[in-house]
Amino acid sequence: GDSVTQMEGPVTLSEEAFLTINCTYTATGYPSLFWYVQYPGEGLQLLLKATKADDKGSNKGFEATYRKETTSFHLEKGSVQVSDSAVYFCALILNTGGFKTIFGAGTRLFVKA
Amino acid sequence: GAGVSQTPSNKVTEKGKYVELRCDPISGHTALYWYRQSLGQGPEFLIYFQGTGAADDSGLPNDRFFAVRPEGSVSTLKIQRTERGDSAVYLCASSSESGVGANVLTFGAGSRLTVL
Image (cartoon, rainbow over all chains, first blue to last red; front, side):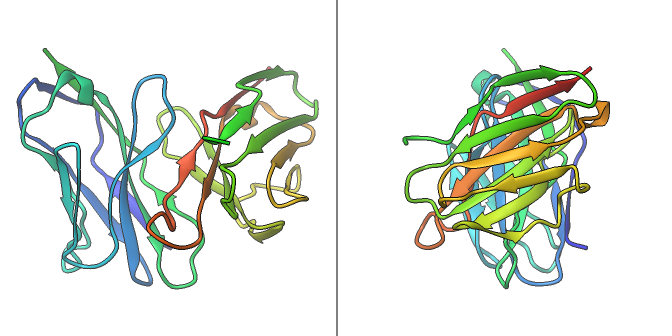
């Protein structure tokens, strides 16, 4: 079935370090891909998305490129801040007839000052 | 409303009791979703409504779980004969069906259910 696999956390980085959180997917159709973020004490919210192969989603300094050949959507940021500490979820929704968004297990990021 | 509102934010109940969780989506969002999130896990799909009808209820774990959306706005998730394994955060989300926001979920803060 359709699924999302992301790297296990927690990931602990110092401020201004480079961040990569890996995400790969399995889908029977052609999905749209998302990164959602959950800050401490807050609800899940969209961080960025990409709807077709080779699209790059970006927001708040974060980027992810939809790679169909490797079925991946890795999240990157060049210089993390303490305020980026949160849980990050990779997700997909099928563009053809699917109604449900499928989430990965989440990766917790801690950024130290 | 301005955001997705869920009540109660916390519910503690005893095994075997009946529970209702309410979701008030963003005004104008026709799609409404219920998810369940256990500690350290991602949201697990339960059910999706398009308008008043359940378009996909394949994620409901068993017949103790039921959800309604009678007027195409507010939804209620109902759990009968609760079990300790039902303890989780129940998330509601809504989305528009078209335009830039299509398929982008806006989540509520969740209802934390604890079954003793």
